[in-house]
Amino acid sequence: MLARVLSAALGLRDRCRALCDAPGAVGPEVSHVYHPLEYAWPAFEAYARLLLSQPVRTLWIGMNPGPWGMAQTGVPFGEVAAVREWLGIDAPIGKPPAPEEHPKRPVTGLACPRSEVSGRRVWGLFAEVYASPEAMAGRHAVLNSNPCLFLEETGRNRTPDKLPAGLRGEFDTAVDAALVQVVQAVRPERLAGVGKFAEKVAERVVKKLAAEHPEVEPPEVFGVLHPSPASPAANRGWAPQARAAIEAHGGW
Image 1 (cartoon, helix red, strand yellow):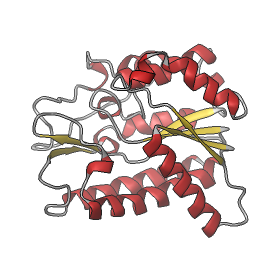
Image 2 (cartoon, helix red, strand yellow):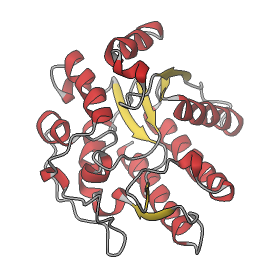
Image 3 (tube, one colour):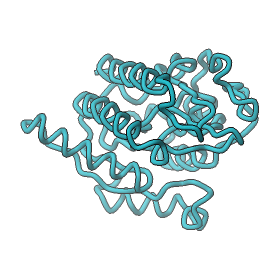
Image 4 (cartoon, helix red, strand yellow):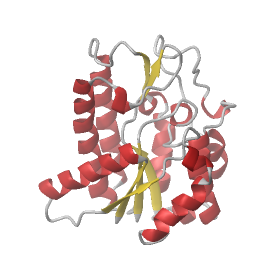
């Protein structure tokens, strides 16, 4: 099972690298692209061993890495303190090769002093519910649909939905194929899309799974409010709203 998850991640990593390296593919607005599944692979593998080596009840799907989360740690929504202290991951993390690293968004790995609010909210909720990651294993796991971080010259994130249309379509194809493999491997009962974009990805993946593998019972799809601090609704209490969404769809 773990081997299939890691194979899907490696295949998606390599396909995304090839897409991003094509001349002009990411568009003029994107100046730097980070591939944390390359330079932080040992940390991602440690995370997968912890939470994706057995069937899970709910697989949470995010959009793509943030500069102070997965871009630093290799872990989806990987707020540094949560990865280091709660998940207990201590793996070597490199850097994007020059000239890929943005001077305003340096990668310092688990020594990064910045905290990603979205990741702190997600992993903080899990830490409230479960005494340890081992207690969480088999219940919940988190993945990002797209493993790349796209940065503009200013250091601002450019989310995958704002990439050139042709590249978006190529990414959709690669992401869908990888997530179908992961869903087949860990057999979740539910896919929780974190934000509207990720919820649409989850819906698309379930349709493809049903078309390609009609013998497999498709997971239920539902949405969870994105925990970004840019969301006024999330800032009014993200955790209670996320809890309510989980409890409305079968509980923890």
